[in-house]
Length: 187
Image 1 (spheres, rainbow, N blue to C red):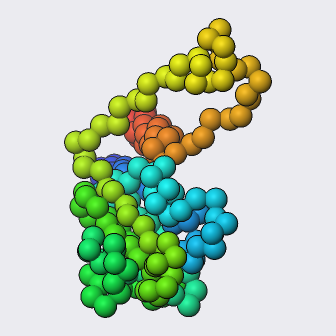
Image 2: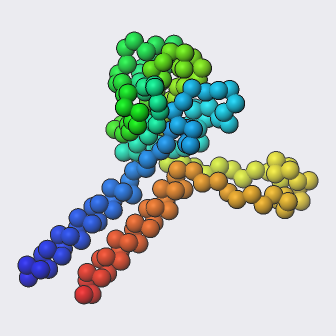
């Protein structure tokens, strides 16, 4: 009987661990580029990067940088690149910041000239009650066709955003936990 109790506790802890993994995502700010001063030749700004991701409570952002810092600031300090009164300051070169509430978060470089060059980002964390509605399908004219269907010459793969990645991980973890439950019940 003690063995069954221990097995149940292990199963319960595994399920809780899986739930934690499924409910958060780690974003790398700037992707491969990291947290660096923009050169003007960058493929996208930090705010464009933030705009193509969906952030939720519990998610984290990872800043990788050298000879710089990350400041969490107010919206006014963000607009003016004011580094003198940050809410939080990080200088370790590998900062992980976890979102603990919904709303807007403002990050700037600790170097005022870097911030003025565009090394700053606004991240909007979605409220749990918000539901993403699907985007309407583009018209055939917008797809580059003459109205007769989709453009068969465009074979590019569809892009994956953070919500898609999170959904895939969520499904896999659900299957894994379900498998453990089934094995526990029939063994």
